[in-house]
Amino acid sequence: MENYKLVLRGDLNQNGYLYGGNLLKWIDEYAWIAATLDYPESNLVTISLNEVTFKKSIKEGTILKFIINKTKTGNTSVQYYVEVFCTTKCQTKMDMVFSTHITFVNLDDEGNKKSLADI
Image (tube, rainbow, N blue to C red):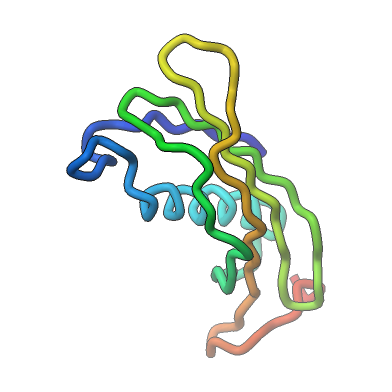
């Protein structure tokens, strides 16, 4: 799955750079959407990101491209690999700024792990 996000002034810190937490929020949201489309009857929650290393600074006007691919399915969990690329204004060259594996677990109504096979 691919998704895009325009970085706006409200996404920036006092020095004019993207807050890292905003990028993590978008990764969580877009990966959750991909997982929910793959498992529409599930109740998925985030349990981990394997690494959080920001490779480049991001400024206002940057267009971020999120590429999300399923990499592993367990009994109650599913993992996706998320790559984030950026370009500024009308440039077509995309540079990678972030990548991580994110894992979701499926829960029942009481908050206990539930098999994805039951969906």
